[in-house]
Amino acid sequence: MRIARWADSDGRVGEGFVIGERVVAFPDDGTVADVLEGGLPVARELHDRVAGEAGLPVSDVTLLAPLKPAAIRDFVAFEEHVEGVTAAVDGASQVVPEWYEAPTFYFTNPHTVIGPGDVLAPPVSERLDFELELAIVIGGSTENDGRSLTPAQSADRIFGYTIMNDWSARDLQGREMKVRLGPAKGKDFGTSLGPWIVTADEFESFVDAEGFLAVRAEVRVNGELIGEDLISNMGWPIPELIAYASRNSRVVAGDVLGSGTVGNGGSLAELWGRRGELTPRPLAEGDEVRMTVEGIGELTNRVGAAVVQPPVAASRPRPRARTR
Image (cartoon, rainbow, N blue to C red; front, side, top):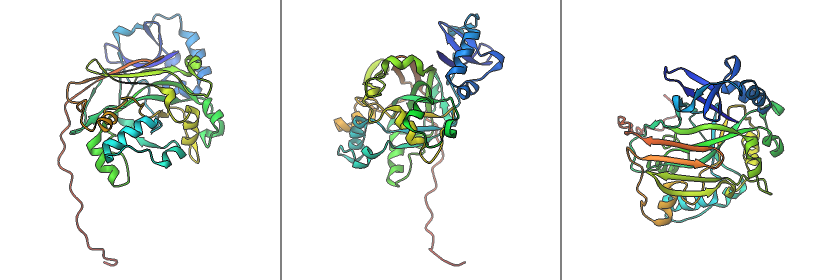
């Protein structure tokens, strides 16, 4: 099943299924959030109820981001990506021992998500980059209230998958990381999700003997293939990422977990680090970034004009007084 959100020619937002070449709204004014809460059994029941309805041609609507995430966690789960990016930042490729100990992630902004076909409004940056990722969408049962799940319990919480572009301003990110915090403004200006959510049951044949999802992912800039990899090259199976995210914490329906950037050109920064130069060049206004993930489809965005902001005020020198 494919689940989407869209705007019709009058700007009205619809939420429902993509069935063949048409979109069909959920019955009873249902929403994607409702369906994620109910999980796959509810989605199947609703799909059966509307499968015969005419709906609207996909070509007559504008697809939106397929959900409004409750939260977005983004992992760094591909060793090859880490090798290249550390060379770009530190001048030497390394994967620190701590990377192997646990699947590290950061939180990004769910309020700046854009959808397929949208134009990115980036900050002023000399090193604007894309990051090709698989996004895991959480749904389903309330077992353990989503807290401290086991990998087996986590597998049951995978509702489906979509494509994710974790846009990055590498120069801003680099400054932030020197403060031992972040990333923040180097990332939170935009995350692309789309074109729709494909339910987890559609991917059962892609799961290998070790539990990794062996689907192919590719990214092109202005039609040129830049990177390609298998999602199964990540360091942990997806249920272990979810279990770690829920550890002493909670995951809920509508949460999105990014797989982390794939290797072999899943980002420009990885290639800059390996080549020792800014080749291919950083993204610029007008560039088209097209990502494809096997079993899902294609997510395409263009880079718009940079949003110019006033200078940031520097820290003020202050006396370290202990009393007024």
